[in-house]
Length: 288
Image (cartoon, rainbow, N blue to C red):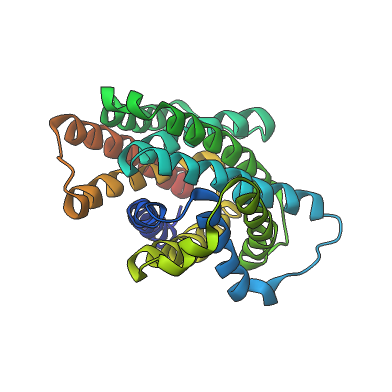
């Protein structure tokens, strides 16, 4: 991974790290399905001109759209509504081992021992942060986030395989599939939508705007861009920085206590990410 692309990946992690805090504020007022629907409806307004039929690839496009849209984010925001940003940030990283296993099994990507070590250390660090009895208070939310991670890893594999579909074209299809579907599900399973919309404050709306424009148009579009250029096993482990940023934002903005366990876990995770990054540079410089 080149230095500019690595820096872009770090920026994406920073955006995602704050996204959970912003989303949690919005989910304090909006129910999960309505929140998700508004997020993608906003994206449709911006990216509708990018919609394009891709002959011979629409099956892949729709699978990615379902995984990255109503299925993945539907379960994710439901889990976030029932849990807290720190727990969700950590549990959501289970997508890393899921993506790695699937890429090895279905894409025949090669992972050598140094990157396995880096991936293992990164995952261990996240688990150290999360190994707290508090997690069991949010069991239903945790289960939803795990389901979201599995679905997201499926979408990641299809994103790695698809070609000649632009970043914003893919994001437009995700929004077109997710927005109306989640709005319909909200009216089917949630209630008082109009009253919720009328009484929402600017701060609560800001969670929807941030997750729509920063998290999706920059973050997820950026990951799609990088997946077209690097293996899943190279990009996925680096996303482990996002829960560390979430913990920092939670401490600074929400008053969460930064424990010794969190510090140790962050150090282990960063060590693993460094190993992965250094190994990638060696592969670029000297070949496999």
